[in-house]
Image (tube, rainbow, N blue to C red; front, side):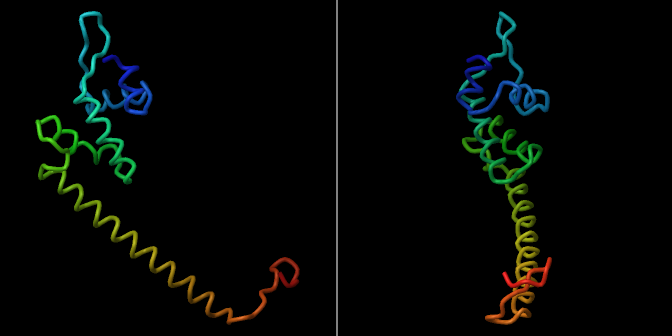
Length: 129
């Protein structure tokens, strides 16, 4: 298939595909007419990249998954390098969750300090809200 068809089927743009090609994530094959050519395996690569990006992975973090698929594995997360990326991402998410819990606790303390049932005063004029 040509680049426009692949972009449409993957739900992306031809510009994005060219960018992935320049980053080495998408193969750069050309037909006899000089046009880029793609197949179903390329569509699978793109779907893997998109899924991971939807999960919050940056583009470079998708590389081990793409390489795993290119190596002939049925899934991009069945290789050791992909699993290592998953582990790093989980550690990153756990740290963020910890930070969010701390912020939530601080906000809870602030609310508790205001007292139950009190009517807050407007900061701008001392009027009740």
